[in-house]
Amino acid sequence: MSLLSESNGFSVLKHRNFAFYLSARILGTLAVQMQSVAIGWQMYAMTHNLFYLGLIGLAQFAPFLLLILYAGHAADRHNRRNIIICCMGAQLLCGLLLLAFTYSGMRAVWPVFAVLLLFGSARAFMSPATQAVLVNMVPQESFSKAVALSSSSFHVAVILGPTLGGLLYIAGPGAVYLSAALLLVAAVLLMAATRPAPQVRSKEPASWHSVLEGLRFVFSRPVMLGAISLDLFAVLFGGATALLPALAHDVLHTGPSGLGLLRTAPAIGAALCSVTLAFIPITRRVGVWMFGGVAVFGAGTIVLGATTSFAVALGALLLMGAGDMISVYVRHLLVQFETPDAIRGRVSAVNAVFIGASNELGEFESGLTAGWFGLTRAVIFGGAATLLVTGLWAWRFPVLSRMDRFPHHKV
Image (cartoon, rainbow, N blue to C red):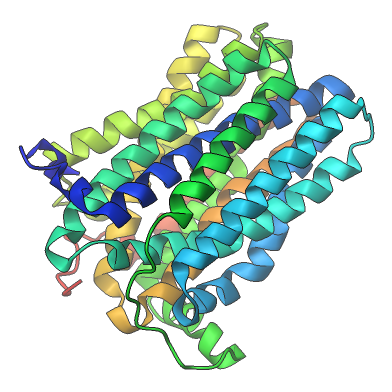
């Protein structure tokens, strides 16, 4: 990200394919983030059922978990640009179906979960293709700048999307779904306007042996296994994001616009932290920083569950985003340094499984425990469990917790 401070940092946009791809990704991310706010608020307004809020995450994660490893292999065998276009088209279909359900006045919830299953399937194929296609969009000498600009733009979209969704929800959920559908139409057209990029395709047929190669590699490296699984279990217990509609309505007494701010706060904390890391990168005591970031995330979750103040809740979510960003930063560099280039795509797919599990499955766990213990107790319990996992993993993976520097493998 430090490349963005250079005077020619935006020169990579002169490459037509990258400029169109980046525009499509920004619009698609905005649409998805806006839509997620509307789905959660509308579901809770219709049912007032905390368990259903957890099911929203599970419905998106289940197909993702089943398909992501094969999707990583598909991204190596087929044209990645075409995969992304098809997946964006599927997301557009999901938005149009949600719009139709809203205007029909339908009260049943199962069609919404069916749409979310389709959305999760599209996301499974889009994730590895999106990560892998960037190298095909720009010349080798411009790749690092493209990565920096793409990452920064994604964070901006994640920050703006929930706020826009919350503000548009004032006009009703239909306004959010319609706006998201229009953005996705533009995203599909922009991605389709890119020229097919040169790509070296794998000729290895899909088999359990080839698909699971990345998984075998991760389990053979204690450092990678510890880093990735720490994020999985910590955010699994501390994933209070699914409960934000209920916290906003029942505890913090705010409306859709307030919910949008709450959903945006972790992304702001992560973005501020990422800018800091760009200027002051972590080079020593890598393990301590990673475990410290997860501990900060757990502590922020406890504060979020214990407070009735909107301002304090915003501060806690900012802290959670910053702590999570530190963990993500260290894990990302470890994965890149430890993985040979020949299997980096399949290892990225494995990493995506763990990331997806820590988010969507964590939302399901939060909804389930909220139904058992109550709303605020569930959030506090999740934060305490995250701190417990941090301590257990520091003991179980000492090679990671005591790591001083990143390994110096060629990326």
